[in-house]
Image (cartoon, rainbow, N blue to C red; front, top):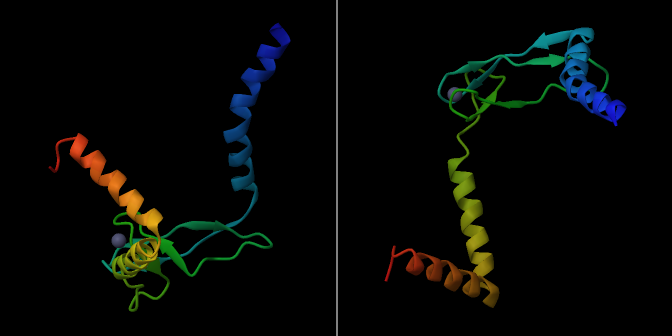
Length: 116
Ligand SMILES: [Zn+2]
């Protein structure tokens, strides 16, 4: 029993340590990305076979997509997300299941006293 506990304890520490070792071993490159708000993010990537530098990166400050072209950052995704949501709602509307879900939601709101 004591042996089992020892193995379990060592496994907890092994995970992060293994990752750190890998990060140090591989050479890293820093890539600059700019978002629509002008924030610059410079994530580092391991230079290894099969590792591709992504075209876009998520801005750490505001969450917008950031691109490698400073003068031409990617557009905020708000409009696209909204359109997708609309399409989703329209799709759901075409079948009765969508209405059932809507009724369920309305029931929840009524239960909480948010609507009558
Ligand atoms: Zn930003």
